[in-house]
Length: 203
Image (cartoon, rainbow, N blue to C red; front, side, top):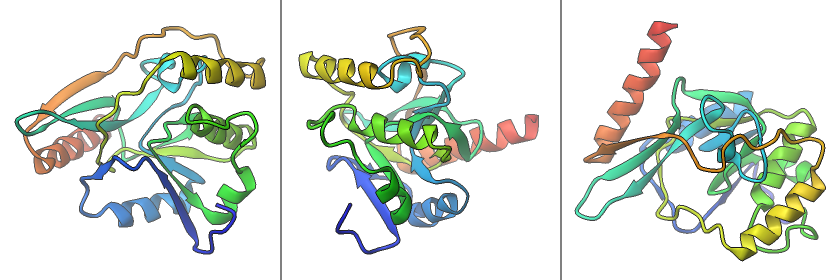
């Protein structure tokens, strides 16, 4: 991050697959009106994991490839193309303008390992008054569902200690979201467009 010279920085897990054909255009469009962009997150951070908040605070979607073809899509909240005002984002994919990313920075002392550096990054951005958002029609496939092991627990305690007094109590430690099965990325895109347009029409 400190060595970056280009205008937009993207932080991503190395095992994702981008399924959107117009991914870059949508991302750049969102960075005009939001400071940090992700594909999954929460408007209310409750505890040490962004998904503990459950519905209706969760936003975005992530796909998982299934054996034999197709995808299982975890739908956290796809009521509009963008969901702003979020308190925390999942680090499987994050993007920000270089000056914003460098201003927030990573806490390399507290989070010197794999876990919770991402949530700390986005939560501190929100605390500073920056606008974190999910772009809900960026289709990303991610094979991992996360590992909540002893190491994660160690860093979760560090996160809770650092941000105590700022977090809402956890309502549910078991993720609550809708899943949908699609046969192709084209079908996934059509489903996403239908969800976004359907909600917009209802509103």
